[in-house]
Length: 133
Image (cartoon, rainbow, N blue to C red):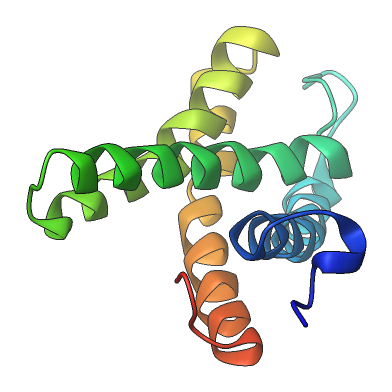
């Protein structure tokens, strides 16, 4: 029986949600560490757990769609690796254009996202098995 059948989600969707939740918690801890010396005059909106979750979840769903498109077009799956740039671009865009962070702070918050996302993805794939990986 599928591990996610009770939740009503597919294996890939369940893996993406678990990865995003774990990576979101790790990113939230990193953001709190980055903001430990933050002064009140240097105000940017705070990033909460839901935003950190979206920073990982949205690119992972986009990468899934990119891989479906690449498979449908019978292209080399090496092109999917370019989709991992989205782990940097999506958070940067959200922080800069939606939350109106200063560019330096938006880049500082976006840099750890691909690192944490890829590490948690590898750990989740190893722990849950590699079917549909």
